[in-house]
Length: 479
Image (cartoon, rainbow, N blue to C red):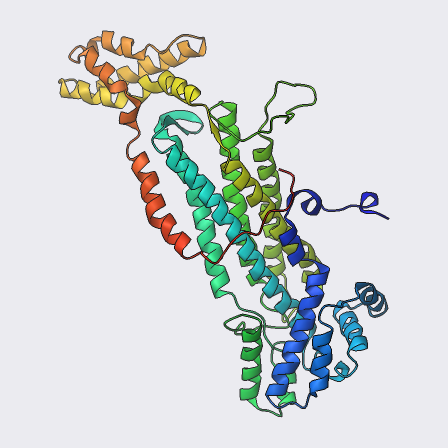
């Protein structure tokens, strides 16, 4: 059978990068297991166990030549994936066979290797978040002072700027980056904890020497790049750690979906549009259409990622006592799928954010259309200063505004200014003074300053803590 004859995940064939896929591959998993067995044996030897150098040399010689077909044959016999790998390595390294997996349980290789992969995968996600942040920051600074209609309840409210709205998206991703950075920096591995987390097997190996057991646990953690191991655990590390990771990835999906949903709304308004290719087809029937297909794809993949968070939540909540095996099959799917989905979502977000198009004429027209409504609060103040009652003026504005809105719904122009100028309640206000209140830049508040201050302050500070995180070169993915 070829890949065309069976189901293959679209995350692999269409959306996620090669770099992220390789992290979660069977080949990488097998290599990490062998590295962990080697590290365990070497550290045990250092602490006094009689493990011959020849055994260690044989393991080192066979870190890469994993025969996954042979492993599969063993697993069909034993119905146990870790034992299948142990036997396959033992065939290649017979001197090491008596010392492989000594004192360990399956979670020694599964949990510690997954901790390594999760941390590296979070590094890729963080690198991709930086790319999204920089793309959105550039757009926000460029459009920092461009007035646009702000919406609450998707109804015209007051004015903001295009750049300030982009900074709202930027801030969400900024929070995600902080969360993932902190998770990477504080992450621990499982270490050497034994079958039910008591380290009893290691205590036996070292003839009751608690200090050597503690040293082995710390040495193993250091060998695989962690500051330490989890303080206590059962057979596996607490699945709440997985839940925490998937909550962070779900947060990325939430930010991405908000960004993409807003863009879909703005593209409907013809104000801000996602990039498009010269020969891109929007509809097989309606040739004129330009659909926000990338933003829609972001929303679709983000929805899948947010749904995956619940897998980790339920797994953490339903582990019995020291452990049950109902986590295994679920985690084989939910962990890699979550990271592949996050990878795909952020590749798309970077592409979209880096190519956003603004129809400034449409922006200006839409602002002009609602500008008289935006200015009513200032007109109210002018009326009060002229000696009128504030509540009376409020009712006059409300009544005229509703009438103008109904007229505009039937195609009329916005003549609210003229109506207010002609109303007796505003007789003490100079109509020219009202018209002077219609400059949009007087209604955007500190929006431009907020964009620049966020860029030069919190965002710059975040970048300084992320210099070691870079996204790998993007594979050919379907944008």
